[in-house]
Amino acid sequence: MTGEPDRAGAGATAAGLRVLAQARWPEPGDGAPPALPGFVHSAFSPVVAAVADRCLTRRHGERPAPEPVGVRTAVVLVSAAGDRASAEQVHATVAAGGRPGPLFFFQSVPNSVAGHVAARWGLGGPVVCVAPTGDPLAEGTAEAELLCHDGDADETLLIMIEQAADDAGAGVRAGEPGGAPGTRAVAVLLGGGDTR
Amino acid sequence: MAERPGVRITGVHALSALGRGAEAQLAGVLAGTPAFRPVGRFDTTARRVGVAATLPETGALPDELAEAVDVACAAARLDAGARAGAPLLLAAHGGAGVPALAGELARRCGLAGAPRVYTSACVSASTAVADAAALIGRGDVDRVVVAAGYLVEPDQYALFDAGRALATDGAVRPFSAGRRGLLLGDGVAAVVLESAEAARRRDAPTLAAVLGWGRAGDAHHPCQPDPQGRGLARAVGAALRRAGLDPEQIGYVNANATGTGYSDAAEAAALRLAWGEHAGRVPVSSTKALHGHALEASGLLELVVTVLAVRHGKLPVNAGWLGPDEACPLDVIRDAPRPAATGYALSLNSAFGGANTALLVGAA
Image 1 (tube, chains in turn green, purple):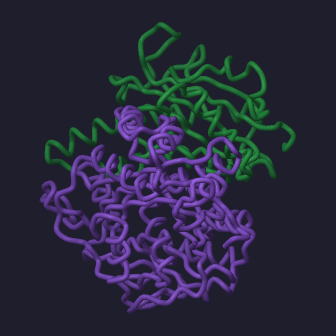
Image 2 (image 1 turned 90 degrees about the vertical axis):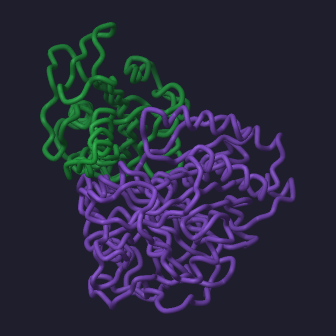
Image 3 (image 1 turned 180 degrees about the vertical axis):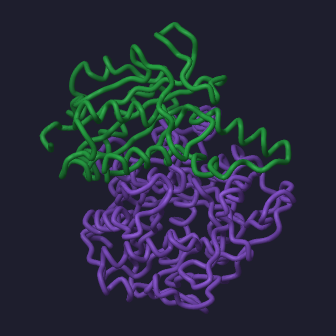
């Protein structure tokens, strides 16, 4: 699972960060995420963008994030397996002696969609993508705390996403917990809350 | 250096097409001969470009990473007890098996576990170093082992080829007129970082200190750098502030420069934005022109090269130079290694997503 916003929202983190906003994808009523220009084949990047938009809209209302907090907001993307659908498509194409489409180059690393979110919302803090070996929320929160404690950010948009192995281009097939697997994500905006 | 304890680098190891081991990296970058050759590791007949900087007879990535960690820990004279207290921060290309790779690597090398793998493209390793320094500085741990690895393989090669990112003339020409793109290269490295106090307590060898670091985003585009270099300029500024140093004290910049037209120009703009006219007076080269672009591992390989060069007192050339580009008004080191005027150097990295890092090291 990709982390639980309710767990993140239970109070301040160990370093004193508070949950300023949170969102899931999917939430009740969601279908496939909106298409994301420049990204193809996989639901991974569209879901990241959708859950980030939802979380940041709940905090800031509209784009971009206000100054001075925007330029001091980090984006931390946490995913153990990354964009499985794109990686598997590229691997199969290359193994068969073919050429991947050029757009797969641009989405070959999770930084690209993290950078899309940062550009769309004017977030100028660090862009960090990590694959946790344990609990995604704990690791993502630890990274957010470190960036804020260290001084390179005041707030962190933490996005946790996992994609089921068979969730390729069809988009989100997931429903509620216990339902069919799909691409699921949680976004949490963490910060001191006094920099808005 | 005594007045600036920073975070000590007490052991390093690196592998690239320049050779195996730290001394091979230093000898290779000072020789100044690019290590690119036709790719023999896999079939490139369907690709536009068939050249990379590969080291013959490399092992599998997990084995090379384990050797790198073991050699770096041995160089740092870490015993089993000290290793057991040191977490591993790994930088590698993401994928379903990567968390398990990190956990197994930590177990195999007797380290205190691997909490996360940095998959932030070409700033993965440099972000891990910055985080390691921050963890030590915050007092969480006495020492951290940072490891990173990329061995040129068919999938990423095909993607860079499809994205027309590879240099079709078989050379990497950072900041130069006529540059045509990057070339990939092998890179596996490991570095032991320790608090000054922990290093002093066990009388550890000290190669250099990480005195400052900075991480910042462009907020500009998913894949292209901000042409004004604002994110990288902020990362540079943060690194100098943490170190308490002025730009005039920096004797060398190992630039990110990949040999790509717009991104090298953006990096030059960042240095101008950060340092003004002084940016044109600081010796700069990109060692990617010699060992290629090691992607997720590039930041650690280049940090090792930078540390060894400033310790040795000679700065590596920027190979592949054809002539000046007015979009890159920098003091690029050409023709021959240059004596280091100071022991302070910056290693810069930038990545897709507008991610930027600056690591500031001081030679011991």
